Amino acid sequence: MSKSTKYVAKVADARGHIAYTPEEDVVWADLYAAQEENVQRYMAQDYLDGLARLDVPKTSVPSCAAISERLLDLTGWRVQPVPALIGFKTFFSMLADRVFPAASFIRSREDFDYIEEPDIFHEIFGHTPLLSDPRFAAFSQAIGKAGVKAGAKDYSWLIRLYWFSIEFGLRRQNGQIKALGSGLASSPTELVYAVESDIPDRDPFDVLTILRTPYRIDMHQMGYFVLNSPEDLFEAADRDLLADVRQAQALGLLPNKFPEKVTAAE
Ligand SMILES: [Fe+2]
Image (cartoon, rainbow, N blue to C red):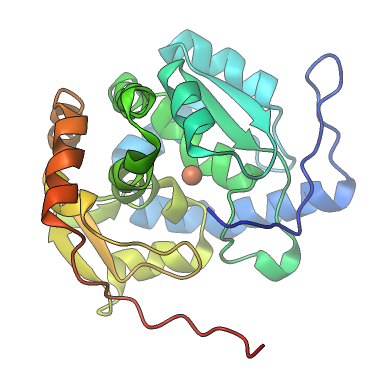
């Protein structure tokens, strides 16, 4: 998670309503329009079923309260607006309580294709479809519960399992690669890249390998993990994930596939 942000959280009123400007609603509508065909083509059926189930609005930023009403019925989850950046400890404990923390601002035009920080389009359009599926919702809660039991030095290890599944996971579906992750559903450029490009590696889903794999939030991934079946992910929820983290720490990180970060001259 980055240390600073140019974005300011939108604050809900007493009834939980957040006011977005007409320009912000247009950004939402344009993002939805940009992704509408792409998600049908590249996202997994699990995600598409969720998007249809929630009937996510197309032309204006949805209210977290309205989405929560539907999610509560389906899986007992709700969406809670939060400041743009929250710490791992808060993040894990909210997931454990079936509360999904949603950054409430929406990206500016210059960040249209990919944004480092999660925004409301990423949170709602990207995440809530899988949270409406009891199996994926239970996996997210299992990560939260493991995080609540973890120590601070474990957070950056455990989060990789979330990153490479819920955020950027791929799956095999009828012999084809499809995307599952919210970070892909909400990125007009990375969704196509993740499924079609020859550049990134696509390795089989393996919990221990994932826990040891470095990632970066400021560029497209160099590698993804592919579930043969979502069942492999749901089974991971029953593992002793903290024991896996210990083992991953003992083995150490795998080599970093990313280019060196270019830092500005001081
Ligand atoms: Fe996310």
